[in-house]
Structures are given as structure tokens and as C-alpha cells.
Amino acid sequence: MNSLLIHPNTQGMKRPLLSTKFWMLAALGSVFLVLACNKTADQPATTTPTSTTPTVNVLAALNLPTTAYDYSNLGFPSFYLTNAPGPLPTSINGINNTPNNNPITNNGATLGRVLFYDRNLSINRTISCASCHRPELGFSDSAVKSRGFAGGLTRRHSMTLINAVLYQRGRFFWDERAATLEDQVLQPFQDATEMGMTLTGVVTRLREQVYYPELFRLAFGDTAMTSNRVSLALSQFVRSIVSYNSKYDQGRALVNNPGDNFPNFTAAENQGKNIFFQTIPNGGGACFGCHTTEAFVSANPGPQNNGLDAISTTDLGAGEVFTQNPIFVGRFKTSTLRNIALTAPYMHDGRFKTLEEVVEHYNSGIKAHPTLAPALTNPNGTPVRLNLTAAQKSALVAFMQTLTDNSVATNAKWTNPFR
Ligand code: HEC
Ligand code: HEC
Image 1 (tube, rainbow, N blue to C red):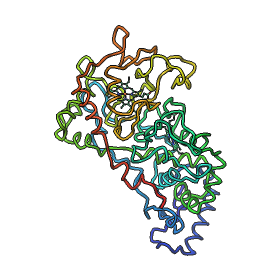
Image 2 (cartoon, rainbow, N blue to C red):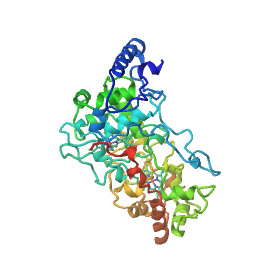
Image 3 (tube, rainbow, N blue to C red):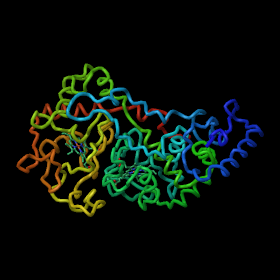
Image 4 (tube, rainbow, N blue to C red):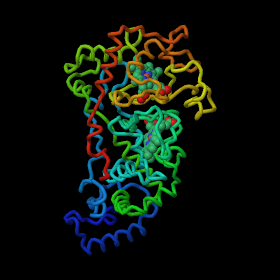
């Protein structure tokens, strides 16, 4: 399909005045779209439209750039893309879960950004996705459980959205009940506690706002507003949120292997890094086996039991989703550790207030359980005890703090576009 037919070239166009010629071309373009492309109407505009300038209506309502920010290029540094020698993969090659039918486009993610911050999309217009996924908290929430539109509490602790694109299994939520990100992003709207809407209600709210027709046109080639397009655009925005501007990254760029001492690290930070990467028989904590690659995301095998409880009672985790197999009981998704110092409290139920408490859990608190991960189980079946010294424990915390990337909260492309 010739995208020029759909997106008339208005590059030389001056804001805010739109010429009659523009509107005639736009109308003509829509006719071609309906005639030629109705089969693919919900496909993203993969060829960047040349008419990328939002109209005066949109710019008056929202703080958006005249040319969309770059979302489509995730911009990973080279060390993310090359495996360092060693037993475990360090590169992110092959783990990106972007589906072929929803690549990130700059205008698609821009629409996603507006949807993400728009409070009109909750039933009483009080909360948006960003209420529980706050950029300054690593797109997570500081509350143990988050408050929905009517003050009700979510069942579990909110999750960071950083590196969602790099979860190889491509499933979402602590218990992995959403098969894809495209499925996941429509669920908060319909959750009775979170946003209290129906998908029809969401589309009605979109129609009320002056800015949406134009944002949908820029993203998808025409102004049709559907929940499917909401799902595609929100997923693009969420997948664009990645992090590689931390102290860890500055140090990593200076050495060949993540196992080498980083010249910019303190002795304690390098010691903590060694504990994080080393196997347990070698005096480490085997953390990198599960929080893996340069993105510190989950390894492929899926949800794990990291020994929080001896018996699973009220929350069976993935055991509630994959009910045909009891080996999933007590297992939860391994989240990324990028920006972990900002996303307290920790674990699916927010039980640990600090990273010190988390480290003490792995050091001395792992509980035996029928599904406890082999990596945290001794050959005789008992849970591992790391027996770290106080200095080693604080070194491990110091290392995790090097993963803090404050640019995630200040990078304009991920900030609130509402004035
Ligand atoms: C009222 C708080 C709240 C709101 C509003 C909310 N979320 Fe969440 N979000 C959560 C909680 C809590 C979880 C974890 C729930 C679970 O696993 O059972 C979560 C999980 C997620 C995940 C899964 C992350 C992962 O790695 O598996 C994504 C993605 C997400 N939310 C995106 C969104 C989007 C997009 C919106 C807006 C449409 C939104 N959230 C609105 C609280 C909220
Ligand atoms: C067997 C795999 C495995 C190993 C090994 C492992 N983890 Fe985890 N980690 C998990 C899982 C699974 C979760 C989420 C558990 C939950 O919330 O129920 C988690 C959660 C965490 C969290 C909290 C994340 C959040 O967003 O709340 C931190 C911090 C953490 N791990 C650090 C470590 C450190 C440090 C080590 C090494 C001492 C380590 N992990 C070893 C699987 C593992």
C-alpha cells in the first residue's frame, strides 16, 4: 500500500493555519484509504507518515513536540547487543517480544503516551495508567498496593514497566495471566478496582477529546478510534521504555566483560557486582542466573519461586493461571532490576520495604517449597543459605543501586504530555 496516498505530504506546511488544499488532500487520502486499505485498517503506519505535525487543536491541549520524539529506535548501547564470554548470555539478542504486527512507530507511541497519562479514561476521571506506574518511581508505585479510581486497593503490588519489551516469554502480570502486552494494556481499563471502564466506554471518552482524532490519524493513517488501536498504541509506548543511562552502564562501557572491575565503581560496588554474578559455590548469590542479560531481566524459563513462602495460601501466582500443572504454584514473574532502588517496596505483595530486606531474604530467609527454584535449593533439597557477611550484604545493595537511571523519569518522551 502506498502510504503517500494516506498521508498527504504536508512537510512544508506552516502551523497553525491549515490550507484548504491540505484538507482536500486529506479527504482524498481518506477515500483512498477506505477503498484500498480497509483490510489493513488497524495496522500501524509502518512507513513514517510525512504529515507528522499535530494540528493546532492537539498542540493547544497537549505538550507535544511538532515532530514526534524518536521511540522506534530503542538506542541500546553496543554492549547490550554482544555476548560477553562466559557461561550465561549477557546480550539481549533474541529476547525482544515486539510482535510483527505492532512495531513501535514514533506517532504510535506518541498516541500511547497520551493514552497512558489521560485521566479521562477512568470512570470518574481521577486516575490514569501513570497513577500506579509513576516515571519517577521507575514506572512503579511506592504503595504496597495501589489505589484505584474509588480508593479500592489492587490485589498485588504494582510492577515496573521498564524493559517490558525484553521479557522473552512476552507474558505479563506477576502471574503471567496476560499472553501478550497487547492483551495486558486493555485490562486495567476494565478492572473493577483500577479504572472501572468498559472498552466501549473508553472509545466514547476518546471521542469527547479534541486531540484524539488527529493523534489516531497520525498513528494509524485515519481517525478511526477502536480499542484495538488503543491496545497497539499503548503497547508501543510501554515497549519504548528502556534504561541504559545508569552508573552501571557508564562503567560497563569502559570494560570488555561485565565481570571485570568497573573503573567508575567503588570497591563495595565492584564487590557487590561479583556477588551478583558469581555462582553460590564460588561465594556469590547466583542472582544473574535469574535477573539476567545487560537489561537484568528474567531468564527465559518463566515464572520462578524465589522462596518467599513455605506454603502458598491466598496467592498461588502462576499456579492460578496454568492450573493444569501444580509446578506453577508459588511462582511469580521475575521483574527487571533496572531502577530497582526506585521501585520499593519489593516482590509481588510488596512485603520488603528495602533492598537490605530483599538481600537478607536471599541470604537467610529462603523457604523450602515444592516448587522452590533449583537455583535456590541445595543438592540435599534444603533452601540455600548464602551466609554473607554484613559488608557483603551492603555491597550487594550498593551494586543494585548502580542500576538507577534517573533519565527514565526526565526523558521528555516518557513524561506527562498534559499541561
Ligand atoms: C490502580 C493502579 C493501576 C493502574 C491504574 C494501572 N495499573 Fe498496571 N499494574 C498495576 C498492578 C497492581 C499490577 C500488577 C497486577 C498483577 O500482577 O496482578 C500492574 C501490572 C501492569 C503491567 C505488567 C508488567 C509486567 O512486567 O508484567 C503492565 C504492562 C501494566 N500494569 C500497564 C498498565 C497500563 C498500560 C495501564 C493503563 C491502561 C495501567 N497499567 C494501569 C496497577 C495499576
Ligand atoms: C531462581 C531465580 C532467582 C534468583 C536466583 C534470584 N532471584 Fe530475585 N527474584 C526472582 C523472582 C521470581 C522475583 C519475584 C518474586 C515475587 O515477587 O514473588 C524476584 C524478585 C527480586 C527483587 C524484587 C523485584 C521487584 O520488582 O520487587 C529483587 C530486588 C531481587 N529479586 C534481587 C535478587 C538478588 C540480589 C539475587 C541474588 C542474591 C536474586 N534476586 C536471585 C527470582 C530470582
